[in-house]
Length: 71
Image 1 (tube, rainbow, N blue to C red):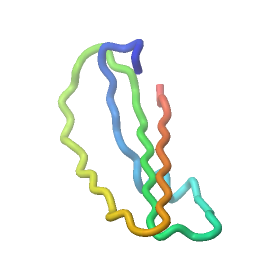
Image 2: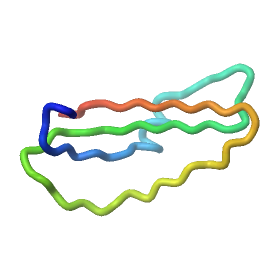
Image 3: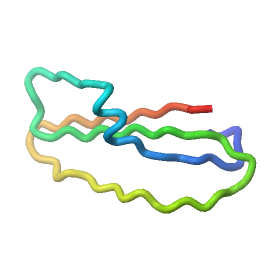
């Protein structure tokens, strides 16, 4: 992303978690998974904001963050 003046960034919560199944033993109390798909752009574009909420973290919490260039 650093090599581009602009990037289109879209978070993919359901598309990612439905396909990239995560199994943890012992099972966590809270799971927070963030996947960001991005694409370099030549110029700025207007897109509607995505609503993002985070669950309350309780007990044993897993946080996963990842992303991919979808060029």
